Amino acid sequence: MRPSGVIRERFVDYPGRITLEAHGMETELRSVVGLLALGLQKDDKVAVSVEGPDAEKICTELVTMLETSFDFPPKK
View 1 (cartoon, rainbow, N blue to C red):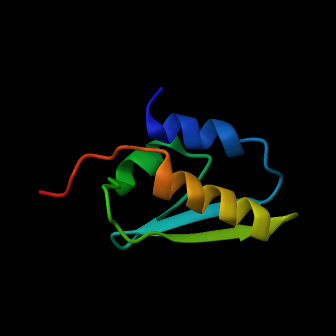
View 2: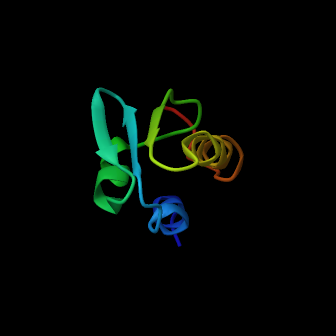
């Protein structure tokens, strides 16, 4: 499974709202197409917003996944 699918799958049942913003675009985490459209690569800056129960915990987990779990292609 691609990183966007893994991320989405982990948080799809979260009852709150999770958004990512990068490259001047924003998407909800539930949208695999939106995640792919962000075109995230290693060392990109991403703003994470979580609204709902345990928001801080969910945000920390997502940030950790983005920072350590995936081998994004290097920037060109």
